[in-house]
Length: 200
Image (cartoon, rainbow, N blue to C red; front, side, top):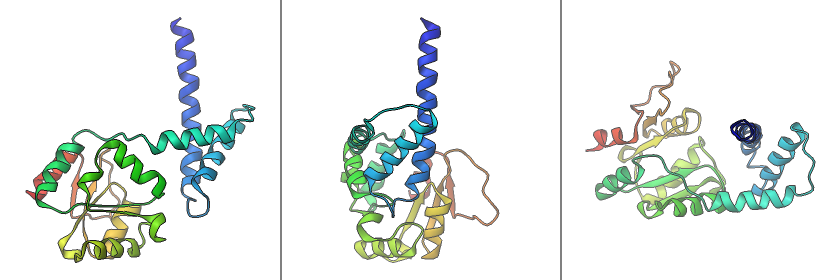
């Protein structure tokens, strides 16, 4: 029984590895394809590589998108950190992605009420690290760059975008990766709770 279970688990894990590789690849082309097209391409490429034949790709893609849009998994301490910050600061989100995914997922996670504004790249036509999406968020909140601290986990999208508009940046380096010499965020944390030390 153990060997059979391990075999099935390994197959499932391998499928997810292949799927996530293709999904990341196509996700970077989200300005070109619709959400449904991205998921279908991910499934088609995954099943082709694994030599699996099916005529249910469209149904699989639709089911995946529905589940994805209504599931929200948050990291430890998120609610505690947001609760403390919301007492004294105005909070907002800048995110690359689709409106049909980002907002429902925040609702599913139960955190949408913390944020005064949620700026989604699809809705405004610009994505991080484009300075336009940061200027749009500042305008929505009627704030200047000097009044803002931006927290993000991507040097490519978050850090580069923030420094282009002179916003102080806190890098959420959850994996404690070594930064390239040119990356010099004002703050860096590996745990979300550490953020409270900078703002209190």
